[in-house]
Amino acid sequence: MRKPHLLSLIGIAVLVAACGGGFDLGGIDLGEILGSTGPGDGSVVEGSVLTVDTAERRIDLDVNYINNLRDDRANSSIWYREGVQVEYQNEMYPVSALERGDVIRVEGENQNGRFLASAITLVRNVRG
Image (cartoon, rainbow, N blue to C red; front, side, top):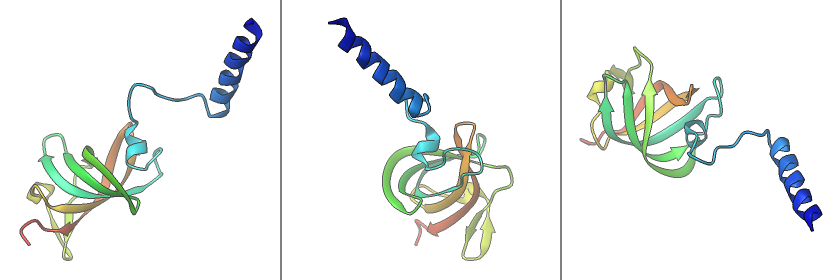
């Protein structure tokens, strides 16, 4: 009776090895959430601004789209590089000008487990 059990364990080990061996049962990889698997693998995220933390250079979003695919991810965080500004109607504004409810489109990539924005566009201003 031990052989089927042993064969099952060997089968699982082979499957894990074939899949690259890396999986995380404890949490969700931010790169996977935001569609970017690693540096240089860019993604586009669109969502509504929840909060802006300029000290941490972080924007918390209620995500609507990832890479043009509908995907609802409440309370997802993105970070932005120093000097990144928000484009709106062909003009540039500081990230601090964003307000709760503004819809933004963010281009960026996964950097050390964080989605790092390289460009932010205001799609819909909450004030109209």
